[in-house]
Image (cartoon, rainbow, N blue to C red):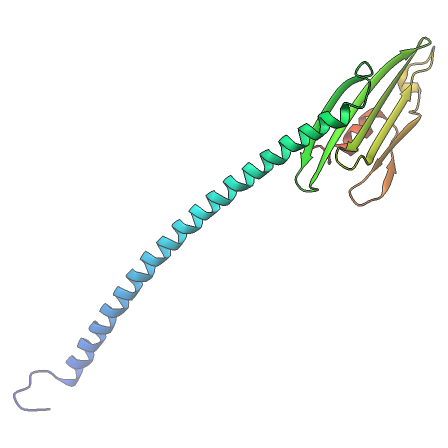
Length: 171
């Protein structure tokens, strides 16, 4: 120890530790500020991305609706009873479902078709012809099939089953 010096080795260590703690505190404060700014930037970028995504989705839905109208214009409007279209973002496809009901020669027939509005490819078809003197539930459809997103074609046995199978395309 040096004479006249009131700072001991222990005191020096405490002072150095205090300085180091101060420096670490300042660094931690800056890191907190930087982290806050980065989080704010991430929130802003996420909001912009969601807005752009929503705008693109709405644009695709509008294009799908327009294409569905063009697709449906090829049919005789007297036959088409109900139509609906949907842009499926997951599959990046525009689907149109048409449902027709006809009455001819004393019997009723019903058909439903699910089609890609741009490609014209059918993904499902349901045809039912009622038989005189039999309840609808006693008559099997003349055709009921749906191509699944996997590419596998499956057979269905009722209107409700057809609707359940095509639901994955129309949501």
